[in-house]
Length: 134
Length: 134
Image (cartoon, rainbow over all chains, first blue to last red; front, side, top):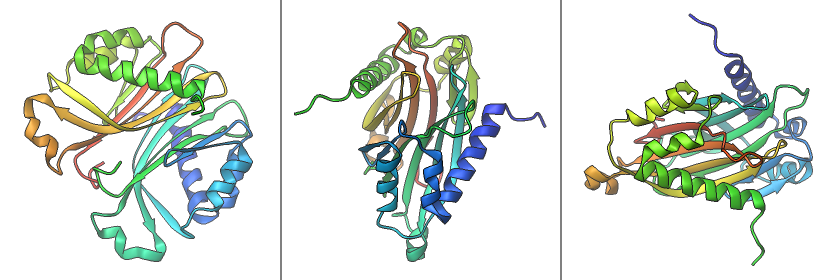
């Protein structure tokens, strides 16, 4: 089997790391953001590591599990990788919801640099509980 | 009301233009791609204007309408705008499907440069007919 393009290897590695950190210890996500990073959460924008981590730390759920169902990665003209990730959210404190049609669909995208030690993540996150509510 | 940030104005303008062209005359989308552009369609990758336009021109539906339900735009460190767009697809030749739960959810993302006359679109597109099939 042909080896995956480098941007797919880097993008999928970043996605695995990002959501593993998100699901196990959200505070460590601070290492992935800079003061130039942006986060959009359900249409609300946050810019800079402090504002982003304040938002992520104040999310109502204590324990969450991202179940990734699809991810696409693209190289960009300036040696970044742009990733789009889709999946479902499992609130570990409310496991039953996971198997019902009301389970959340989640989408995310991230841009990060290949040429720096620290990713400059630019995230957008949208959730919806049904195909019609997004 | 405060004026929207420049990246939101540019991003929403690009999104409106892109999907208007897609829905009215897909061939004109060629103006938005370069040989460095990428397109991922349902997980299948295409690179360069020729490959991308061959794919877009060969889509099975003749007439489609993108109904945008949400869009987020972010500035990137190199003066690009990254946009995530979500919505539903209406096959104009099969209008009845639009009102059924099986209607498609569509997600897209695009990166384009502010500092060039031509957008360098990097698209990813995923569709699904139910929350579990994406």
